Length: 471
Image (cartoon, rainbow, N blue to C red; front, side, top):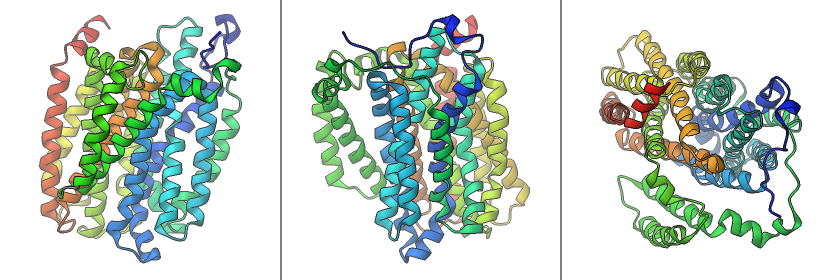
């Protein structure tokens, strides 16, 4: 008999009047915040790391791309493992990986060790969000609810994206006050707290012996599909990071890995990457695309503006971090009240409009602009980060099949990371001659085009119109 290893079975009565009490949701929020914070906290530490390790500033970009790459591959993989092995088990294992990454990074003496640490952190933090979505979905079903209270998804939205905007200010303060190693050290106390809270989550049911063997698990999670997906994603990211030059070796590997992987996945009855289901589920596909394009804009602004403020505007590391604090504050304040109503169309329209307005604003910035202009820009993109996560995350929950919510949630994050990776590529091209005013304006043009694409993708989405009409 096969057991679906998710959160332990309870009847609605056993769950009590508050199935989503703070003891259940808080560890999910803390765990889900680790990935976005680690994604952005490194931004203000790159220059000090390069100086201390005596390497070129450009070389430290591997610390950004390595976490993105590890996360892009690990997010859907963790979701699949959660569906098969148990969400709590995978969630706890992820926290342990982050703890190890924090230890390795804090002791790192060279760029290679720091890169290993970032990969460990990327793998570990990737488990939290898809596992949380699996546990939330299952908890709602046990409580007899079609979907969880909006505040629950709102909490995940804040943890999943709004906290990313807090990363640079936190990083600026930590790095400025105590040195760059605290960009890694911060994970140790946070993961210790997260682990203590996560141990109180309801246990997964035991796995049957017949289903716990390596071959059985490999077949159920489609290990061959995961390996093919990982190879394709890795080579694609390496190719993207090489632009505007062309890495022919990476492109060749991408093609050589993608074609047989597609063939394999189309033949499987339960594939890791369900291409047929994705192509037939237009609402889910458009949600992925909106998330990718919006995060391209948010992270282009976050990292591009950070570099420009330090290199051309003349701000210190701490001051640069503080300039992005309004972005995190607005994002955190807006996410929860918006999510309480489980809205979709309104927030994603607001996201597209605010991203477009902010991108236009970037085109008018220069080294003589008043500080108030930077603060206003940070506030506008704070609206973008809040509304895109709330709207698209709720759209994901409603559009994804219930039995594939873990993998679907992981792919949601993967598409987001493709957006962030592309943002670093665009930033590198725009600032190839230095983080100048001209480079910033070139970046703004690209972001305006991306904002227009997101707006059209939202306004012309019939599924969103129908959902809005029936809400």
